[in-house]
Structure formats: structure tokens, C-alpha cells
Amino acid sequence: MNRKEIFEIIKTFSSARAPSGLEKARGELFKTEIEKILANKDIKINTDSLSNYFVKFNGKSSKKNIAILAHLDEIGGTIRKIKKNGTLEFSKRGGYEGRWLVSRKVSILNKEGKWISGVIGGRSPHATPQKLRGEEKVEPHEMEIFIGAIDKEEVINTFKIHIGAPFVFSGEFELLNEVFNDNIISGYSMDNLVALTGLILLVKKIVNNLLDESGNLKKPFDLYIVATTREEIGTEGSLFFARNNPIDEIIALDIGLVEDFPGTVSSDIKLNAGPVIVWQEASGTGVFDYQLCRTLVKVAEQNNIKYQDGVLEFYGSDAGKVQKWLGIPSALVGIPTMFAHNVPEISTLNGIEEAAELIYQYLKNQN
Image (cartoon, rainbow, N blue to C red; front, side, top):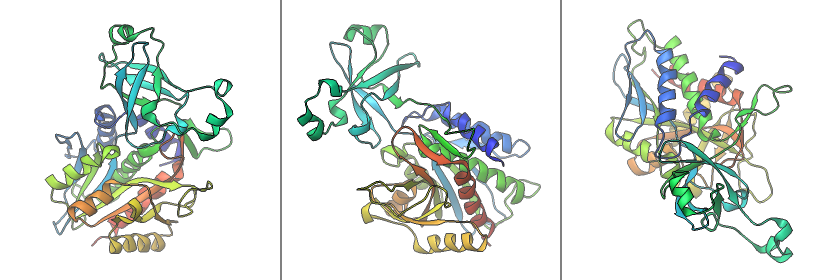
């Protein structure tokens, strides 16, 4: 699949927003893309009661069950209070800091299912004493969203916004400099649109190369492809899925952190140096299956797929929680991404393709 085709898929996914707990619109787009690939196969796309979307490929025998995961949801927030003057206080939905939020535009889902635009307010430097500029650390719970309402009644009655309404961060989703580079992409929710797109590429490779005429997998395992929910608020979807299906091994596809700013903690991951095989996360409390990671390295080297090794400190994933809480051998493959949990995030179309190819070759070599 060429870069233009990959970009069209991720652009399609970006058109549906997916705050944690409200992933259905994006999930339905995921289902549609999978259905296109499976058009002539008697294979169903399923959902469960936590809105995970998944497809199962039955193998020629059932030596084990493998699941490949990527999450649907994105960071955002929840309206906590409507003030008398018409501004809105909020709580986080997912993890981020207050330092990048001032003047950030958001989209709030109202009672009628419409997205209402707002801007997170903050003091202008023209009105802030020098001492406060250097010392102030603004927390999200201290900030407010301005939507143009004159009072609380207008917020409720005209804008139809209520306490508990979710919001996501607004922006553009695009090639960063299309005239000069058709590989670097910029936009919101790159975590985890890149991985969802990677799942589509992976399914296409599987259908084109690993299925027999009956639609069964020509491999000695059953395979689940899963778009999970609620990852950003505690990996609820993956845990629910893994508890309710006979899974023996998990590989999650997510982002790999590209960080080289002073004061950051990183593994020196580069944007264009290949997918990241993550060995550990969560400040040492999330240790992935060593043999599974070693096998992924071996597959990459045997198939001339460039890769990077990574340890992610302040990061948690579907794979890490399933490994830790359920004891299912798990691994994490990251697509290199800059400015994670900010807007915009930066990633690459090549990175999506390379990560999908690594997991495909892993599956292909299972005998």
C-alpha cells in the first residue's frame, strides 16, 4: 500500500472523534475499513459490551490464540462545572499537563450530539507580572473554557452543554509539508490513529497472503484483531477483552515516544528509524515478555526490517496492563511519534507501514 492510500485511511479515521468511553463513531469507521478487505469472506466483525471491535481468523489448528490490539480512544476532558459567567471548568480524560493548554481550542459534545467549539483561557503575558510568569504552574483543574456564552443559562439552554459533557482537542490533520515531504503527518489523536491504521494494513497483508480459499488462516493458531476502548483511562477495553476470550499471547500496536528535548527521559528513539520494540514501561512496573520481544527482534533482523529498542518510563499500554494483571505474555510495538499527548502530534506514514510489516512477518513465521 502506498503512502497516499495509507494517508487516506488515517484521514478517514481522524474524521470521527473518540474521547474515552465514546469510541463508537471511530469504531464504526474501523469496521467499515475491515469489511472492505473481507468483502468476499464469510468473516464477521464483532463488538462486545465495552464497545471493543474485533475480528477473528480461525487457524488450521488451535495450538494458541494470538491477539493484536490497537486502541480507538484519544485524550480529552469532561466538563465539571458551569460557572455563572458562562465559562466551563473541566476534568481531564486521559493524561496530560496544563502547561500547553492555554489558548488551546477544544470541541465539546453537547446534548444534541453536536460539537461546540471552545478555547481554554489563561492570563495574557500583557497582564501577568514577571514574577508569576516564572513561577506559575497552571493545573488543568484550575483552567476554564470560553465558548462565547454570556452566562450559565445560555450554556445550558442555547449551547446545550451539561456537566459531564466530553470534549476533545481541536486542530488540523494533514501532511506537515506536503509539497516537500509526503511522509510526515501532523494532527490530533495520532495516539492512536497511527496504530489503528496499522491494523488495517496488517489485516490486508493477512487476507492477501495467509488465508486459504475458505477464509481460514493457514497457520496453527487463531488470530484476533482488536480495536480496543478506554485505553487512555486505564486500558479497560483490553482487559475486558482478554478476560472474556481465550487469549494466550498479545501484541499491542501503539506509539513510540520520540523525545530529545532537555529534561526528558527517553531511549533516543528516532522518527524515521523503524518501529519500536518496547521492553519495559511504567517506570519499571511494566515488564514485557522477554522471549516475545527477542522473537520480534529476530524477525525484524531476518526480514531486514529496521527497528529500535525502547524503554518507556511515564507510559502505560494495553499490552503492559494485560501482561501485569492477567499474566498473558505480551509485547508492545510502537510507531515513532513526536509530541505525544499534545496537539498536534507528529508521526510518519512509513512508520505505520513498517510496524504492520513487522507484526505480519512475526505471524507469518509462526509454525
